[in-house]
Length: 345
Image (tube, rainbow, N blue to C red; front, top):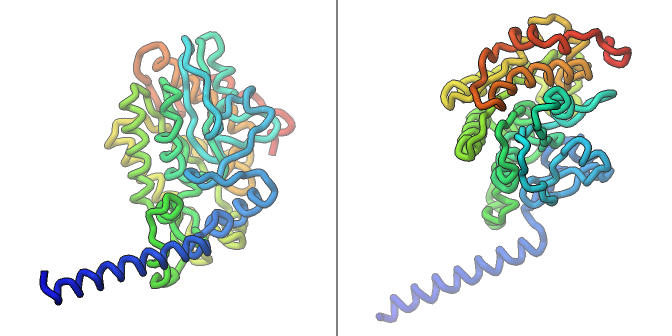
């Protein structure tokens, strides 16, 4: 080895040592770390501050154990699910639209009640604020172990909200330590707040979840999320930072619904177009809360009734027959039962 070659090798070695030391120092200082409360909006920050959410290294955050978890069959990321017995299992993967209700239990519980006598368990793996990326990560980490016979996937809203920091994918890479902190010294701040999950990534996440579930023998239902976004509701989204003043929330939502429909077509998963159904019923105040996003108690009953009709032939060993939501609702008297006082507009 010549003297010149030795000098080059020593210089490269010294550079690697210096870069490594710099990376260690930056990590020790937590430089370049973006915490969930800074990245995912006011509701996540409040949830973490008030103890309604707990930090999670893989899923960004999770909900603390609750006394109703067992009754509602709510899944917790750090708690094992009982081994599968003779009962068929339905897994609900989603966000606050599948987790939260008012005076009645969420549709997952109502669905199990509707299927009583068929030896079915409905497990709810839904967390407020979750995107399809978080749902996919949780599925791969734990939820495939539930061994579902049917999986119901209801994501989309949080995917197309504006992040106050970086995208979900970039945040996940940083959580796993794959992002060099040294690079953040040279990274310019984004000129505009990115969407948490782009429409293309949304499609990839849905496709990945369908593929993983199919490999385990599960039938998959994709829910097209209904909406009723008034001008007031959109303005509230602007005020809380979930969209920009020049964003069209209705158009954004439509783009993600179109991609969901494309995924359903390409993967031959069953799509339940609840969005079109609810719009056709022309009763948004009875079905969608004032925020234009979340389901009312009556809507939870309607969705449970639709899903019960759709799931029954699959649980019996067949295929989902007519999955047109209108036809499913017509076959279910429970869906059009008079609303209770708490459900009335």
